[in-house]
Amino acid sequence: MDNSILFGNGINRLSDKNISWGHLLDKIKDVRKFNDSKLPNTMIYERIILEKPNKDRDVLFNEFEVKKEIAPCSA
Image (cartoon, rainbow, N blue to C red; front, side, top):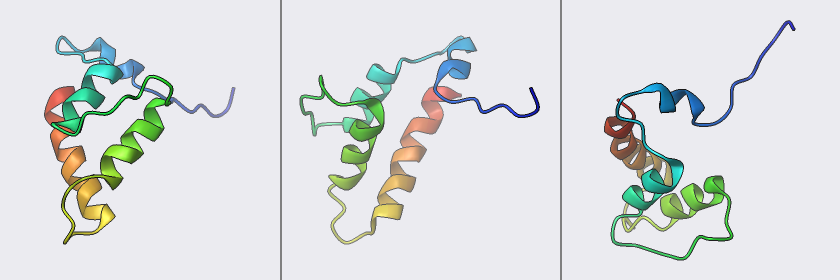
């Protein structure tokens, strides 16, 4: 095999402070809870970004803010 692509959150599960996708997504939803039982994790993440209440900022800023929330969880 010449090339490999690693996809997913599996590598984070090696940490002593590992966190599941479900728990992580619930954490970054904050108070904006919604039923996501039929959505894939990637769509839940996108919805969290797009519904972030920072109306005066752009989507890239919102995503950056969410990624800052995620970073301490995976450290």
